[in-house]
Image (cartoon, rainbow, N blue to C red; front, top):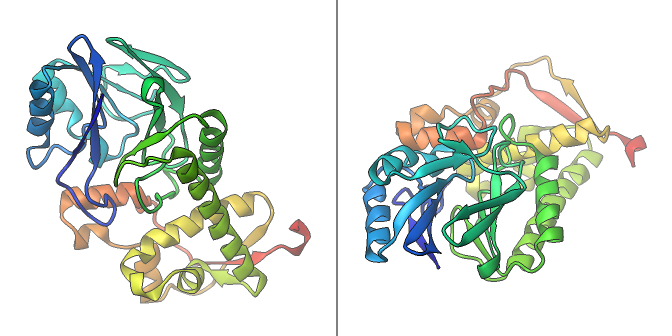
Length: 307
């Protein structure tokens, strides 16, 4: 019923590549979830996969607006006549809005459409009851964890989304994520993601209890030095946690009256477009939110009274 078709765009952000899903909706109809990038012949592969199964693609559904999930939507729609649907808040060109908190019907299939903010604010998760399957986009991946980075994402909405998936979809068996392999134990993976976010927040608070720290200090303390290429992503993750903790009065921030060191600047404001090609840079910038430049360096302190 569900065929995974992986795009040829592997990278540190996309893992082995972006996953597109072809769903057989019965009576010769099909839909595609996340058509992916419009490179490497991926659109042609999607069309050929449908043709081999004698299916006509009627709808193209977007879990969220990041370019590695969406750029193939327009050429695939032009080639097939399919309708493109996305979150009402999406900035991506589309023919119609997804029915949030309702069912989307294509052929004999009804997909439940769940508003799932956090990774982005235009994110949805789909649930296919017949397969007990969740299509999670970048909310949950097949391996590793996903990036939550302001301004496009926020930590507390993301954690609420995870809690909702755990509470409302306990019967789910499979997770088809935006990247990585298919997950065959959905409840365990959701629990793993919830625990991971709590662990990371505990690490941040434990570090701040020992004394005030900047985000680069926290990155060096919490994450492995062997993964410095990922430190900018880790810095944005910590920023998302700190924004939540500061809003709750658990930490306070103080602007430091000094310029960033070159290492701090590279970590907080990486010049992605100078390192990568334009297409991959666009994906990384969208994921990390580095269009928001951090012009000042802040030191964060734990607030004793908050505990």
